[in-house]
Amino acid sequence: MKLKGKGINVQALTECACYLLFGILLFRLTVTGGYLSYVTPRMKPYLYGLSALMVLWAVMGAGKIFRPRYKGRMFHCLVLGIPILILAVPPAPPAGSAAIKNYSSSSIPGSDSKGSPIDYGSTSEQETAGFDYYEDETEEEQTDYSAGNAGNGDDGQQAQNKQPDLLKGAGLNGIDENAKTITIADDDYYAWMTELGAHADKYQGYTVTMKGFVFLDLENRQEHEFALVRLSMWCCSADMAPMGLMADDLKGLGFKENNWITVTGKLLVKDGYPTIEAENIVAAEKPEQEYVYPYY
Image (cartoon, rainbow, N blue to C red; front, side, top):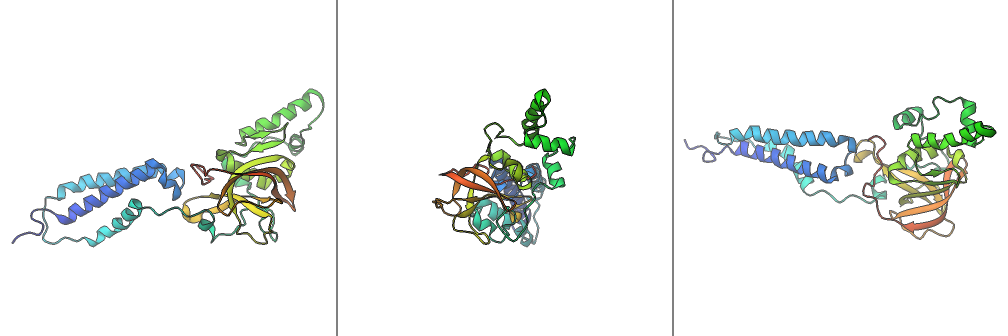
Protein backbone atom coordinates (compact mmCIF):
# COMPACT_ATOMS: atom_id res chain seq x y z
CA MET A 1 0.00 0.00 0.00
CA LYS A 2 1.31 3.40 -0.97
CA LEU A 3 1.84 5.59 2.09
CA LYS A 4 0.45 9.11 2.24
CA GLY A 5 3.04 11.81 1.73
CA LYS A 6 5.39 9.87 -0.54
CA GLY A 7 7.80 8.98 2.23
CA ILE A 8 7.29 12.24 4.14
CA ASN A 9 5.59 12.30 7.53
CA VAL A 10 3.36 15.33 6.99
CA GLN A 11 2.28 15.43 10.62
CA ALA A 12 5.86 15.50 11.92
CA LEU A 13 6.82 18.10 9.29
CA THR A 14 3.93 20.37 10.29
CA GLU A 15 4.69 20.01 13.99
CA CYS A 16 8.38 20.86 13.50
CA ALA A 17 7.49 23.84 11.34
CA CYS A 18 5.11 25.14 14.01
CA TYR A 19 7.67 24.69 16.81
CA LEU A 20 10.42 26.36 14.82
CA LEU A 21 8.30 29.26 13.56
CA PHE A 22 6.84 29.93 17.02
CA GLY A 23 10.30 29.89 18.59
CA ILE A 24 11.74 32.29 16.00
CA LEU A 25 8.83 34.75 16.25
CA LEU A 26 8.91 34.68 20.06
CA PHE A 27 12.67 35.25 20.04
CA ARG A 28 12.27 38.20 17.65
CA LEU A 29 9.54 39.74 19.82
CA THR A 30 11.78 39.42 22.89
CA VAL A 31 14.92 40.81 21.27
CA THR A 32 13.14 43.82 19.78
CA GLY A 33 11.38 44.62 23.07
CA GLY A 34 7.92 44.14 21.59
CA TYR A 35 7.06 41.75 24.40
CA LEU A 36 6.82 44.75 26.76
CA SER A 37 3.40 45.51 25.30
CA TYR A 38 2.14 42.22 26.73
CA VAL A 39 4.21 41.29 29.81
CA THR A 40 6.66 42.89 32.23
CA PRO A 41 10.48 42.89 31.83
CA ARG A 42 10.91 40.19 34.46
CA MET A 43 9.41 37.70 31.97
CA LYS A 44 12.27 38.22 29.50
CA PRO A 45 14.45 35.25 30.59
CA TYR A 46 11.42 32.95 30.52
CA LEU A 47 10.58 34.04 26.98
CA TYR A 48 14.14 33.30 25.88
CA GLY A 49 13.88 29.91 27.55
CA LEU A 50 10.58 29.14 25.81
CA SER A 51 12.06 30.18 22.45
CA ALA A 52 14.98 27.81 22.96
CA LEU A 53 12.61 25.02 24.00
CA MET A 54 10.54 25.42 20.82
CA VAL A 55 13.64 25.20 18.64
CA LEU A 56 14.84 22.16 20.60
CA TRP A 57 11.49 20.40 20.05
CA ALA A 58 11.71 21.19 16.34
CA VAL A 59 15.18 19.64 16.13
CA MET A 60 14.15 16.56 18.11
CA GLY A 61 11.08 16.04 15.94
CA ALA A 62 12.99 16.42 12.68
CA GLY A 63 14.04 12.75 12.81
CA LYS A 64 10.41 11.67 12.36
CA ILE A 65 9.88 13.60 9.14
CA PHE A 66 11.13 10.74 6.97
CA ARG A 67 9.18 8.07 8.83
CA PRO A 68 5.95 8.01 6.80
CA ARG A 69 2.59 7.40 8.42
CA TYR A 70 -0.54 6.15 6.76
CA LYS A 71 -2.72 8.72 8.48
CA GLY A 72 -1.61 11.99 10.01
CA ARG A 73 -3.39 14.08 12.60
CA MET A 74 -3.04 17.83 12.07
CA PHE A 75 -5.78 19.45 14.13
CA HIS A 76 -3.68 19.72 17.29
CA CYS A 77 -1.25 22.02 15.43
CA LEU A 78 -3.83 24.79 15.78
CA VAL A 79 -2.70 25.11 19.39
CA LEU A 80 0.44 26.82 18.08
CA GLY A 81 -1.05 28.08 14.82
CA ILE A 82 -3.15 30.76 16.51
CA PRO A 83 -0.34 32.31 18.60
CA ILE A 84 1.93 32.16 15.53
CA LEU A 85 -0.53 34.35 13.64
CA ILE A 86 -0.73 36.76 16.57
CA LEU A 87 3.06 37.02 16.80
CA ALA A 88 3.49 37.31 13.03
CA VAL A 89 0.99 40.18 12.75
CA PRO A 90 0.77 41.77 16.23
CA PRO A 91 -2.15 44.14 16.72
CA ALA A 92 -1.47 47.85 16.98
CA PRO A 93 -1.19 48.89 20.64
CA PRO A 94 -4.33 50.69 21.79
CA ALA A 95 -4.29 54.35 22.72
CA GLY A 96 -3.60 55.03 26.36
CA SER A 97 -7.10 55.76 27.60
CA ALA A 98 -8.63 53.08 25.36
CA ALA A 99 -6.48 50.48 27.09
CA ILE A 100 -7.92 51.35 30.50
CA LYS A 101 -11.56 52.18 29.78
CA ASN A 102 -12.67 49.18 31.81
CA TYR A 103 -10.64 50.14 34.85
CA SER A 104 -11.41 52.47 37.73
CA SER A 105 -9.47 55.72 37.98
CA SER A 106 -9.03 55.14 41.71
CA SER A 107 -5.28 54.72 41.23
CA ILE A 108 -5.08 58.46 40.57
CA PRO A 109 -5.18 60.29 43.93
CA GLY A 110 -7.96 62.87 43.94
CA SER A 111 -9.69 61.63 40.79
CA ASP A 112 -12.76 60.66 42.81
CA SER A 113 -13.78 63.20 45.42
CA LYS A 114 -15.89 60.56 47.15
CA GLY A 115 -12.95 58.34 47.97
CA SER A 116 -10.13 58.62 50.45
CA PRO A 117 -6.53 59.47 49.56
CA ILE A 118 -4.81 56.61 47.78
CA ASP A 119 -1.77 55.30 49.62
CA TYR A 120 0.64 53.94 47.02
CA GLY A 121 3.19 53.57 49.77
CA SER A 122 1.82 50.73 51.83
CA THR A 123 4.38 48.98 53.98
CA SER A 124 4.69 45.93 51.73
CA GLU A 125 5.03 48.01 48.55
CA GLN A 126 7.58 50.34 50.10
CA GLU A 127 9.73 47.46 51.21
CA THR A 128 9.57 45.83 47.79
CA ALA A 129 10.35 49.07 45.97
CA GLY A 130 13.13 49.97 48.39
CA PHE A 131 11.34 52.68 50.39
CA ASP A 132 12.90 51.84 53.72
CA TYR A 133 14.98 54.96 54.29
CA TYR A 134 13.20 55.84 57.55
CA GLU A 135 13.37 52.33 58.93
CA ASP A 136 16.18 53.01 61.41
CA GLU A 137 14.99 56.47 62.46
CA THR A 138 12.80 57.43 65.38
CA GLU A 139 9.51 59.20 64.78
CA GLU A 140 10.94 62.46 66.15
CA GLU A 141 13.97 62.28 63.84
CA GLN A 142 11.76 61.57 60.83
CA THR A 143 9.68 64.65 61.56
CA ASP A 144 12.80 66.78 61.95
CA TYR A 145 14.30 65.54 58.69
CA SER A 146 11.09 66.18 56.81
CA ALA A 147 10.96 69.74 58.11
CA GLY A 148 14.63 70.27 57.35
CA ASN A 149 15.17 71.63 60.85
CA ALA A 150 16.52 68.93 63.11
CA GLY A 151 18.38 71.37 65.31
CA ASN A 152 20.89 74.19 65.32
CA GLY A 153 24.57 74.29 64.59
CA ASP A 154 26.49 71.39 63.09
CA ASP A 155 23.95 68.78 64.19
CA GLY A 156 21.16 70.66 62.48
CA GLN A 157 23.17 71.07 59.29
CA GLN A 158 24.02 67.37 59.23
CA ALA A 159 20.35 66.50 59.64
CA GLN A 160 19.40 68.78 56.77
CA ASN A 161 22.06 67.27 54.54
CA LYS A 162 20.93 63.76 55.43
CA GLN A 163 17.48 63.95 53.87
CA PRO A 164 18.58 64.26 50.20
CA ASP A 165 20.93 61.29 50.72
CA LEU A 166 18.09 59.23 52.16
CA LEU A 167 15.81 60.16 49.31
CA LYS A 168 18.45 59.29 46.75
CA GLY A 169 19.07 55.96 48.43
CA ALA A 170 15.39 55.16 48.14
CA GLY A 171 15.39 55.70 44.39
CA LEU A 172 13.91 59.21 44.59
CA ASN A 173 16.16 61.04 42.19
CA GLY A 174 15.55 64.47 40.68
CA ILE A 175 14.81 66.39 43.90
CA ASP A 176 16.48 69.70 44.73
CA GLU A 177 15.80 70.60 48.35
CA ASN A 178 17.23 74.10 48.07
CA ALA A 179 15.33 75.11 44.94
CA LYS A 180 12.30 73.05 46.01
CA THR A 181 11.97 71.34 42.64
CA ILE A 182 11.25 67.75 41.63
CA THR A 183 12.03 66.53 38.13
CA ILE A 184 10.55 63.09 37.57
CA ALA A 185 12.46 61.04 35.00
CA ASP A 186 10.93 58.08 33.19
CA ASP A 187 12.91 55.58 35.28
CA ASP A 188 11.79 57.20 38.54
CA TYR A 189 8.10 57.51 37.73
CA TYR A 190 6.80 54.68 39.91
CA ALA A 191 9.05 55.63 42.82
CA TRP A 192 7.77 59.21 42.83
CA MET A 193 4.11 58.29 42.36
CA THR A 194 4.47 56.01 45.38
CA GLU A 195 6.11 58.73 47.45
CA LEU A 196 3.74 61.54 46.46
CA GLY A 197 0.70 59.34 46.93
CA ALA A 198 1.77 58.50 50.48
CA HIS A 199 3.54 61.67 51.66
CA ALA A 200 2.21 64.55 49.57
CA ASP A 201 2.28 67.01 52.48
CA LYS A 202 6.09 66.84 52.63
CA TYR A 203 6.36 68.24 49.10
CA GLN A 204 3.61 70.87 49.06
CA GLY A 205 4.82 73.98 47.26
CA TYR A 206 7.53 72.15 45.32
CA THR A 207 7.71 72.76 41.57
CA VAL A 208 7.16 69.41 39.87
CA THR A 209 8.04 68.51 36.28
CA MET A 210 6.69 65.22 34.97
CA LYS A 211 5.70 63.56 31.70
CA GLY A 212 2.59 61.54 30.95
CA PHE A 213 -0.45 61.40 28.73
CA VAL A 214 -3.74 63.25 29.18
CA PHE A 215 -6.49 61.16 30.77
CA LEU A 216 -9.99 62.65 30.99
CA ASP A 217 -12.25 59.70 31.87
CA LEU A 218 -12.63 60.77 35.51
CA GLU A 219 -15.50 61.00 37.95
CA ASN A 220 -16.66 64.51 38.84
CA ARG A 221 -14.03 66.06 36.57
CA GLN A 222 -14.13 69.85 36.32
CA GLU A 223 -13.52 71.57 33.00
CA HIS A 224 -10.02 72.70 33.95
CA GLU A 225 -8.99 69.34 35.45
CA PHE A 226 -7.24 66.37 33.90
CA ALA A 227 -5.07 63.48 35.01
CA LEU A 228 -1.46 63.19 33.94
CA VAL A 229 -0.82 59.44 33.90
CA ARG A 230 1.08 56.51 32.56
CA LEU A 231 -0.08 52.90 32.38
CA SER A 232 1.10 50.64 35.16
CA MET A 233 1.52 46.95 34.32
CA TRP A 234 1.95 44.55 37.24
CA CYS A 235 1.85 41.25 35.38
CA CYS A 236 0.54 41.53 31.82
CA SER A 237 -1.44 43.82 29.54
CA ALA A 238 -4.72 42.59 31.03
CA ASP A 239 -4.05 44.33 34.36
CA MET A 240 -2.93 47.74 33.08
CA ALA A 241 -4.29 50.71 35.02
CA PRO A 242 -3.56 54.46 35.06
CA MET A 243 -1.08 55.81 37.60
CA GLY A 244 -0.39 59.50 37.96
CA LEU A 245 -1.55 62.78 39.46
CA MET A 246 -4.43 65.15 38.98
CA ALA A 247 -3.60 68.51 37.41
CA ASP A 248 -5.33 71.89 37.16
CA ASP A 249 -4.89 74.04 34.07
CA LEU A 250 -6.85 77.23 34.59
CA LYS A 251 -5.62 78.58 31.25
CA GLY A 252 -7.49 75.89 29.37
CA LEU A 253 -5.97 72.57 28.30
CA GLY A 254 -4.77 72.86 24.72
CA PHE A 255 -4.19 69.13 24.31
CA LYS A 256 -6.49 66.20 23.62
CA GLU A 257 -6.91 62.94 25.48
CA ASN A 258 -3.99 60.53 24.95
CA ASN A 259 -1.61 63.36 23.99
CA TRP A 260 1.78 63.01 25.66
CA ILE A 261 2.78 66.19 27.48
CA THR A 262 5.27 67.49 30.01
CA VAL A 263 3.75 69.52 32.82
CA THR A 264 5.55 71.90 35.17
CA GLY A 265 3.71 73.40 38.12
CA LYS A 266 3.32 73.75 41.87
CA LEU A 267 2.38 70.70 43.88
CA LEU A 268 -0.61 71.47 46.09
CA VAL A 269 -2.48 69.23 48.50
CA LYS A 270 -6.24 69.60 48.07
CA ASP A 271 -8.44 67.63 50.48
CA GLY A 272 -5.50 65.34 51.13
CA TYR A 273 -4.74 64.73 47.46
CA PRO A 274 -1.59 65.79 45.57
CA THR A 275 -2.46 68.02 42.61
CA ILE A 276 -0.26 69.87 40.15
CA GLU A 277 -1.28 73.46 39.46
CA ALA A 278 0.04 73.65 35.91
CA GLU A 279 2.20 76.63 35.01
CA ASN A 280 3.66 75.31 31.77
CA ILE A 281 2.49 72.51 29.47
CA VAL A 282 4.38 71.43 26.36
CA ALA A 283 4.01 68.55 23.94
CA ALA A 284 6.26 65.56 24.62
CA GLU A 285 7.45 62.49 22.76
CA LYS A 286 6.13 59.15 23.91
CA PRO A 287 8.96 57.43 25.84
CA GLU A 288 10.52 54.35 24.31
CA GLN A 289 9.29 52.35 27.30
CA GLU A 290 5.90 53.94 27.91
CA TYR A 291 4.57 51.59 30.57
CA VAL A 292 5.44 51.61 34.26
CA TYR A 293 6.52 48.30 35.81
CA PRO A 294 6.34 48.32 39.64
CA TYR A 295 8.51 45.20 39.89
CA TYR A 296 11.35 44.54 37.46
